[in-house]
Length: 374
Image (cartoon, rainbow, N blue to C red; front, top):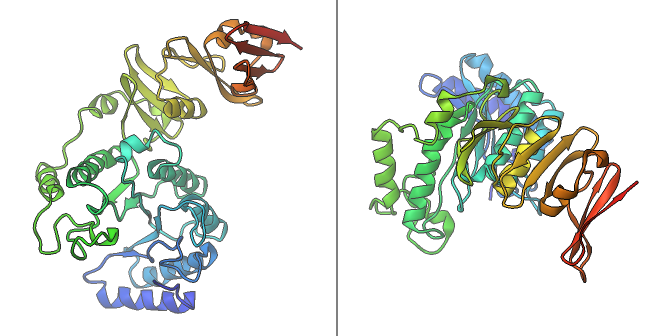
């Protein structure tokens, strides 16, 4: 366990001394490790205290070497719970405490043993989407041009197989450069911390404790020797950018029978019908349901590929909702936009309904769709 520094000022003085002593060899300084968790910032994570450390350390290091790179965050993946604060609210609290402008890059540890970065782009709570949300906070606070660094990434072979470890690392390593704000990508780690005892903290290495290479070691060295080649999925997106969408915030991901990539102001899809863009709130539903658009977003509406039809409506006053099948068939413009998602009405009849600005459409297997206007 690691406790937080007792005095942020003294910690900053130490950071300045480190920069003075090692500045001829060390030019990049990461301020702490995963301060959003008790395990590394006891007795409890404190974004205000960490921000004081960061702000004062930034000033102390820059006073010694104005060209040094100071990396803030090193935030870890975490859910709400005892002794942890998720990275997005932790960063929001850092900005509220005055962190803006006091780092040159922000770092994150996007561990996900189930999916590489691109696949994670489909899921709203994934580490990849947490990085998207952190970028939005950086942009809103004047730090939008600063890079995101992945300073730890990997998977322990005490939990996943060597094949899975290799695939996760290599896929994410190749996907990360597709993000416009991507900084360096660090793999954790080179060698297992100990023998295969079942302790997941000991099994992250690309080699065993006695330096026997795992499958990931061979795969990673091969990719690096090849210069981290650009993925085939990404090449069409690189050649067909829509600059109005801003910067890319995720890698290219597979979705249904096509691909997509999320940008600051929307998501671009490569579909059988060509290139189609969706605004952010609409695209969030499309990614979650893993469906592709079949036409452009126009007049607050966009159609998507489902066997019985689907349309996502989005308006400032009504929110963003998807309407399917028979309920969509029964809809008319006189009802206005939906103001609710589809919801159950009577479980005994399996009836479901969508509420609209000027009425409700209820559907059941026995009666079909019934429209009530108001």
